[in-house]
Length: 155
Image (cartoon, rainbow, N blue to C red; front, side):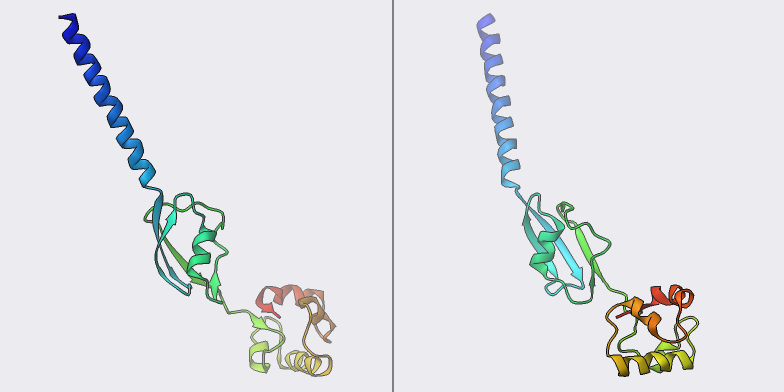
């Protein structure tokens, strides 16, 4: 009687140990994840990456367009199986003080046709602005006006 119980116990133990080994082998085989990327990327699609890959790894494989806005992402975040990443477009609604024409410049708060023309004249005389603060060299643009427009302009 005890022999049968011991044999049954050993048999169950062997079956249990084998099932653990099979499960761990399955986990080792699942070393890759599939992630989809679309939007402002050069090569949208589904990518197979190593388990533990980061968003930066995916961006390098897919390539980003010049208009890609990745500011909402942490490049070191770890990707998960079946995740979908959508890369948006950078807002291009800033007005370039180096290239804007009169009509574009007068859309800035507090900039009328006179100051807009002085900005254009300044560019013709001194060349492109090297930094945004240099805009204060234009007659009529002081600290206050610059503070109101700085979030709407770029070089």
